Length: 382
Ligand code: CMC
Image: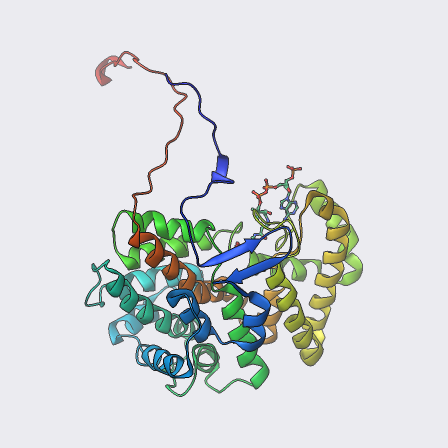
């Protein structure tokens, strides 16, 4: 047998290709999309502008952004058979599973679904990015037995999502917070879900299969599923005075603090800082339980960082986003779908970039089993 190679569990520290899409400076709390700081994009930009930036590699002019938005707007509606499928999904299905099902089914209606050329993928990415908010809002309403609302072509993707979810135009703070959430979650390098999409894309399979793989990977609690679980952890604690006791018990039980720790960030995630600001705004304006959960989260962050920062475990993006979503009345199990709704932009950007310089992703696993064993026919095995 060959000499044992170095094994990089979890592919930690492995670079799979060269990218110009985003850069994480994990020791200095910095995240850049195409060279622009995340703080600037969240302060001044919009999700649509961010998607353009990620896909085209530069900020759009006013005219280009207008056309791009128009293109998205024309693609927001769902084919009627897809709406029928959404209505038939069992009510106890987790929305991430529902989303995976619907995106997969939607692929059947795309006229150029097997076209993996750059132009073909681009067209599909526009269609899907435009439809994501419509799909998620429709899943939420169908589950509650409510009628499904068509997108309003006058509204952008974030505002439209809230409109289709609630049946009325959201307050300004909500629309802005949802847009910022989309910007913050849009892209994040070679994380598990982006890699999953590339594994599928690298076989020259099809765009929808690649995105479905991304959704599947994102759902897990160690990845995007953490935003829902972080909120559930604040609810479980329930009271800021119970934080210390809860934390000690959690540590003793070797429970992980959801929304903390990261494979790349060894400092405070800059996206978490922005979400925290919005979480505070919602906590102050909504008050009641939300304010209490914010205080729980704040206290837990303080206690956890005091103990965990020496291990270089800090707050990540999924810690504070739930408070913002709860402030808008979004059901807990829709938090990870909101992550997916934004991340489809990053997954698509990586697919464009990777497939253009494609190489089949095919790593190895080092074999440690036996060899040359005698095969005993079934009838002689007893
Ligand atoms: N709470 C408590 N301890 C932790 C945590 C945490 N959240 N995260 C890591 N650790 C400890 C871990 O137990 C280990 O300790 P020891 O060396 O004593 O065994 C040490 O830190 C290193 O952990 P690791 O598992 O080797 O680190 P990793 O790079 O594999 O972990 C992670 C990254 C995100 C899976 C992990 O930090 C985690 O499970 N966090 C909680 C889930 C979470 O918030 N996920 C969202 C990630 S950010 C958004 C996204 O990309 O989806």
